Amino acid sequence: MNRLITLLLICLPAPLLAETIEIPVGQQGQPSISLPHRGESKSAVLQRYGLADEEHPAVGSPPITRWDYREFSVYFEYDHVVNSVIHHQPRYLKEQQ
Image 1 (cartoon, rainbow, N blue to C red):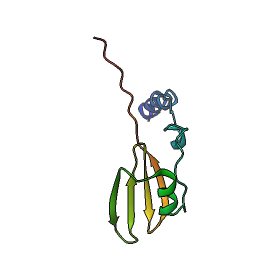
Image 2: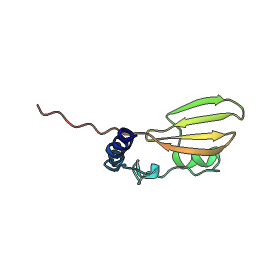
Image 3: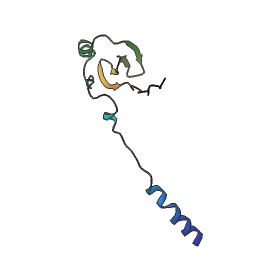
Image 4: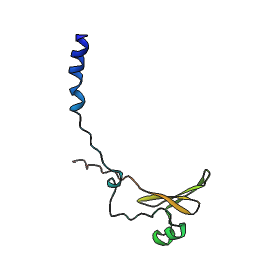
């Protein structure tokens, strides 16, 4: 019993030393990018952003379509936006030569 208490006293402080860093999803991309809003029609997105770099065919039921632009993708259910996602832009350190 004494061993169990000693073990618990040794292990309890360990989680107190850990640090959790949380980055809200909305702060992970560039804030200057204006994205299509939920509910916008395909024609409104087309008029505002122009032709997509790539249009993926509808998948599933209800049909979900994806349009890829250079910096973001737009997901449509039928003819309306359900989500817009900024593409991850990795930042590599330049190697010293």
